[in-house]
Amino acid sequence: MLLTGFVNCHLGWEWIFYIYSIAGGIWGILWVLIVFKSPYKALHRLGQKERELFEEERRKKHADLFTSVQSAAPQEAVRAIPFKAILTSFPVWAVFVAGTTRSWVLLLVTNYFSQYLENVYNPNIIEVGYLSSLPFFVTTATVCLGAMIADTCLKRRVVSRTVARKLFNCVGFGVEASILCLVGFMTWYFPSKVAAVTLIGISCGASGFAASGYQANPLDLARDYASILMGISKLGGIGGMIMPKVVGALTSKGDAFGWACVFWVTAGLEMAGVVFYAIFASGKQQSWSNYRDARELEDDSARLSASYQHSVGGGRAYGAPNLGISRRTIDESYVDDEERPLLRYASNREEHEFTDSMTLY
Image 1 (cartoon, rainbow, N blue to C red):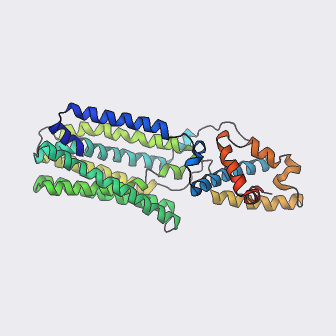
Image 2: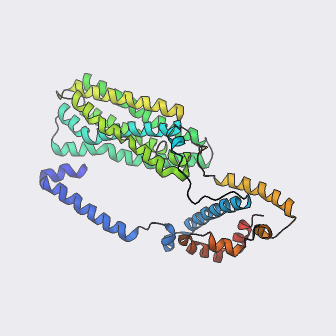
Image 3: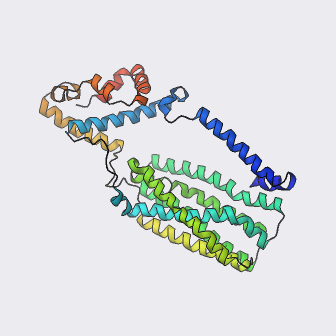
């Protein structure tokens, strides 16, 4: 938006499409050249800490597999997706409602903020481009800042994951809704271009903190079905489909009162979404998820290790006398092709530590 107004006035409207098309083409070429589908395909680009992170994730995956084998649990080739449980889960619907209200507000600011400035304050087109881009610069900064604060709170266990998601989502969207309501009153009673741009910028900045709430929430609810939950949350785009009809009906005359009503309706819907999320959202893995975090795996490993040592009286590692599974069989049969380079790296770097961590029983 910052560039569009300038290009339109100095180069012509057709150059808007040329510039963005060329930029998109360059981006696509760079994406093909430098992006890989898996970190295991680009180990040379991983730093030491990143290698250790992926190595630890692989260990957790294998620990889960070995625990299932030792407990004689049947391994299903493909697990059925629990759509009934997903669609009847209130935490999932909380994410959907948050996505719906966010879609409404985001597309309102993206598509209609410039029209609002033109109808109420009548600035020139270059000024519209500059002013309408400011809220998005603020949002970009607050999204990053909010993520850093949320991660710090979770790592230090200042609050639980559920409290963190609710806090960031409700504070972010709650502040945004309150400011939009104020913008409505300002537009109708004492219009001010500077105040309008400032308040809209602050409201968008506040919404950036909510990204650490509802957008990260699908991973909390079910990591193994996070892609499905994220898809459901994106269905909240229906809010952006309905919003233009409402805005068109309320602003048919292009007057200040019509735009004030738009902001009031938007604030009311967003606040309703905040209340719904505050009541029903959760940061815990749901009962229908098959994912278990590292602490749960450690508890299971300790429990089964004690039980197994008691039953076999100091048998060989990995329960080989009972299951006929050797370390070599485990390493070569249950490791994905893409993980093999990282497995070789882990084995060469710290063989003894690897052996200790993989010897379960």
